[in-house]
Image 1 (cartoon, rainbow, N blue to C red):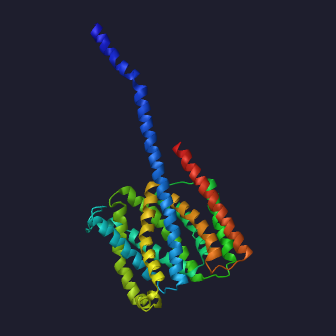
Image 2: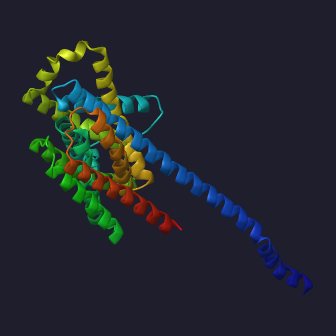
Image 3: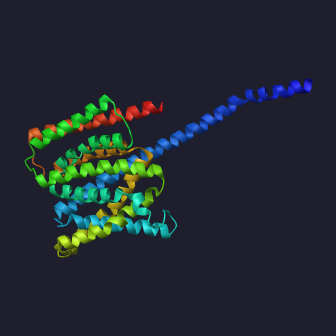
Length: 338
């Protein structure tokens, strides 16, 4: 009976040691959480820097150097993506599934959104001054909310909706006094907003399914769409214009063109990474904060911004909305985790 009594007490004795085990598990859990937060911040920062650099480089190539074909810039970015990822796979640095007949079905509709987003963004960059380009990109946040609501069933607070309205209201004020108004540029940038929002939501959906992974999505996006884009460039005369461009002898232009091509891949990778570790909406917020810096730099150094008080006030209303929106969204995410 004494032995039986001791055996019955032993589990209780083990349970008395549980605080140390609980403490160890808590420390391990806290370490994992800190690591996850660091990865999220790193991915967000990487996307912010990449997004800023490619806007500046593309603006320089298409506006300052007057390169005639934004489509050919897009093709250069696709080629760089394919070359870098294929080389990485051959060297065993990265991995993604081999091509088969199921790939297009798994990718749809991302390749169409990818090429449309890329080309419309380049056209918009070419046609608009940097401050108006960035303020009109605010609409992508509203559209991202719409697509995340439809595809991912997410809901948003009244405070978030109010700040998004403020951003859009400021954009309308700025646009009403844009002396460099370009209808074609406005159309392309609004199309770019729609495609960016849809692409962000679908990327999150595809990454969550884990069928192809981020490298597979990037590689097959570029591979599937490069041939129709090249066909379009050939029949539209873009290849001819690019071939006859006089600036190829300028080494600084060539460096910037190559940098634009490589940054196209880096940007797409950073978007995938940020969306994977955060969300499509967080990716939009980072892009929004980056656009604040681009707006003020574009006013001073862009060379094609025409100042009016109404336009300037509208830009700053939109920027103020962006900052409040970013703060509210960040604090809400922290509250949910707590």
